Image: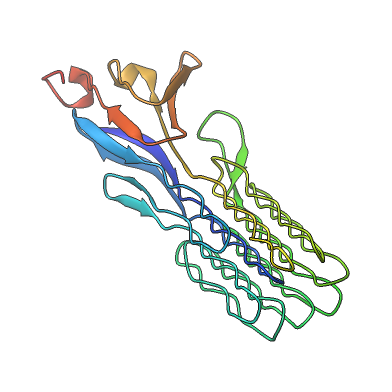
Length: 255
């Protein structure tokens, strides 16, 4: 048995339409010492939700990141998810609840709430300004700091639409405009749209493994990079990670 660092990000929720709230970010799950044995592991990378749709879960072994909540449409509340979606912007609405991140912001009769991010709640809509998406979380598992799982901004019936949260959240749009999609492989929520336009899609998730190169054999799966000390496997889509352990890692048989 040997340990990996594991980051699992779910797909972001789609933004709502018709004065919609921003989509909630996909769930953020990180384990700095996840024990693996010599075997093949299925890796599931969740898709971002289309507009008005919840994001899909991402899964590795016992770790499940929950898909982001959908932004509320019109007069509906934001949906629950990894982070909650923002409330719709044509009535007084509430944001959804985040199970692995933050709650979405509330909506008012002139603009939607922002979707929750993994590290910050979505902004509330106020007269003339929609809520911004909540910010995501920075992680250096790849060797460089990258921010993941930002919430989508709410749509504005008039005035200023909500910005997307850091970590791939899409911006909301103003009257007659479509919200921006969340960035692929960040789990960012989609921005809310106005009029009859479908909300911006959530960004797809990602699963990343990192380990000390000398502790493992020739593991395979995803896109592999190394700096000579650490090796990183990045899964931008679903696949299989094969863990190969050396005798020094506590396993005296090779996979």
